[in-house]
Length: 206
Image (tube, rainbow, N blue to C red):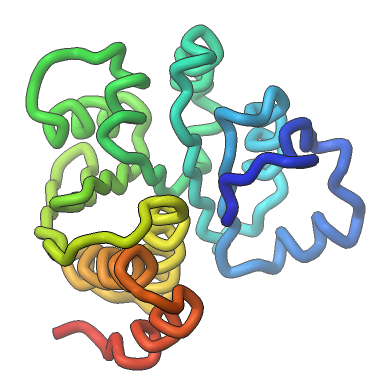
C-alpha cells in the first residue's frame, strides 16, 4: 500500500542517488505519491520534474492536504512544477481541499483547476471517474459491487490508470480499466489474486 508513510514521510530529493536519477530519466512513467504526508514533497516533485526524460509520463497523487492548507495552495501556485506534471490523480475530497471547498459540480471545479494548472486531472470517486483537461471532459461510471475494503483503493486505481495510459488506451477505456483494477482490490477475497485476474482478463479497448 503506497499510502503507508512510514520512513517515507520525510523523503526529500537528497535521498535520490545517481542511479535513482538514471532510472527516473529512463522510465516510461514516474508516480509521485504521498505528497500530503511528506513535508519535503514539493521539493521532491520539483526535482523529479527536472529529472524525468522528455518522454517520461509524470503522474502525481497528492493525497488529502487538509492538514496542510497553506502548503497546498503554494503547490497549486508553483507553475514550474505543473508545466511538467502530465496528470494529477485525486478524489473528490482532495479536490475539495485544493479548491477550498468551493460549491459546484466537482467535474467543473476540476476543469477550472485544470485550466489554471495546464495539466490533466484524473478525478475518481466511488461511483464514477473523469479525465478533465482545459477543454474536454470524459466521464465513466464505476461498478456498484459491494466493497470488502476501502484501504488501498486509490493506489489500485492509480495503478490501473497509469498502466492503461502507457498502453495508449483512449480515455474512456483507460478510466474503465482503472475502476476495474480498483474494484478487484476492494471486492476480492484474495486481493493479490483478484488484481492479477483483472489485469489478465482486462483486454484492450472495447
